[in-house]
Every structure is written in structure tokens, then in C-alpha cells.
Image 1 (spheres, rainbow, N blue to C red):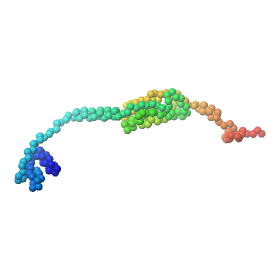
Image 2: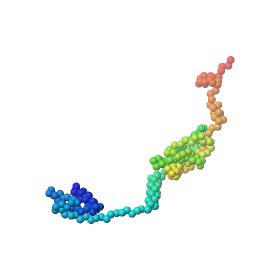
Image 3: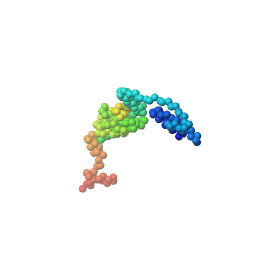
Image 4: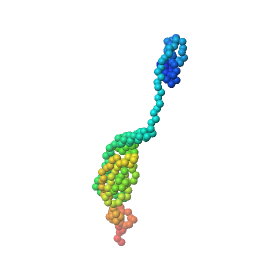
Length: 210
């Protein structure tokens, strides 16, 4: 094995330096190669392989290759993107929601699971306008909404902000009690008796007649 490696090395030297190679056998029968003509050595003929000169490549070819590579990467990311199915499960379509503070919880069902490692995020659209920034979650709280009907839609977007998938648009109806209604409710359910005096079952809070 060592002799074979030596042969390869010497042959390479011959190619580049054009040095003559001589083969001989020593007393132990080992084959030796040398650039010196020892007694009894025979010359080994080695063909000289022509040298190679690289051909200059135009710069615009590199640019075209880079563009093709970018297109391939974009296509690969597109192929890895799942076909999402989105649906808004809370509130449901045409639901009447009674919340006095106007804070409505929204839950979006996404199948398959949102691929956050690919930069996918969820964006809500309320009454035709974007709500906040896209986020990697499917649970939201819409704050301080006014009374009335509202249209809601959810979308999944990629890193470039392009829409990958969208849900159906639902409509929910928000009801909020007015201040007058709240006062009426408080009066209706307020305990009867002396103001500031606790009302206890079995105890007459009314003052006795003199």
C-alpha cells in the first residue's frame, strides 16, 4: 500500500515537473520507485497529462444563476407551505353577543397547525379593516367594540405579507347595556330597607312603628 501511494505521488510529480521515474526491486523483494537511476532499475514511462486552463465565465451568467437559485428557494418554501383551512369558531356566524365592556374573544381554528418556523402568522380583519399586527396565534380579544353588527375574517400570511389562506367572513351582533339600563337593573335587584343597613334573611330591616 505504501509503495502504491509513493507511485501515485511520484507520478503526479512527473506530470507537473516531468521528472523521470525508475523502478527497482530491493533485496527483500520490495518494489521501489525513485527519480534516481539505481543499479538494475528500469525507467517507467509516464504519459504527461495536458494542463487545464479554466474558461472565464461571464458575470451575467452568475447573476442569472443567483436569480434561478432564489426562485428555487421561493418555490421550495411554497411547496413546504401546508394548505391551511381556517374557520372562526368563536363567535359563531350570526351570533348575538352580550358583553357590556365590548371586549369580544375570538378563536380561529387552523388546520393543520400554524407553521411558525416558516414565518406564518394570523391577521384579523374587522369590518374591512386590519386589526393590529399579524401574530403567531389563533386566539384574540377585540377590545371596546361598539354595539351593532360586525364582519370578521381571519387570514394566514407569510413572511412577505402575502395571504396564504383565508376564512369565511362571519357576522356577529354585539349588544351592550346602556347606562340607563344598568341603573334600572341595579334598582331592580337592589335590597329593600334602610340605606346602608344590611338586609339579612329573617331580619326586618324596616324601622318599627312608634
